[in-house]
Image (cartoon, rainbow, N blue to C red; front, side, top):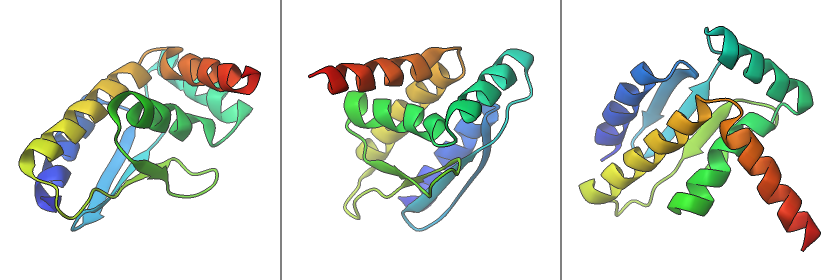
Length: 129
């Protein structure tokens, strides 16, 4: 299943200019993001990283967790790497669900302001409760 997930995530990487690399061993998978080429996305990328270097990955993680119930982590403070650590009992249906969810979140991330605005709104609402 690790090889299957890597293959499918690498196919997704071809669609999205913010993905720099997908790598992994077994079911430990990392998706590294990098500055996009297009002007609009590059502007948004620089703005987001200017506010907080960890905000971009959070904008990917929050919808993955809240909307799709996919557990993932930021690889480290200030980095643009997300770790996917699916359970060892994952089957192909589960893997396809992860790929589909990641595809939806990445599509939203490639719009501006997209998930950045949504994450900010969710955090503000949570703080007000």
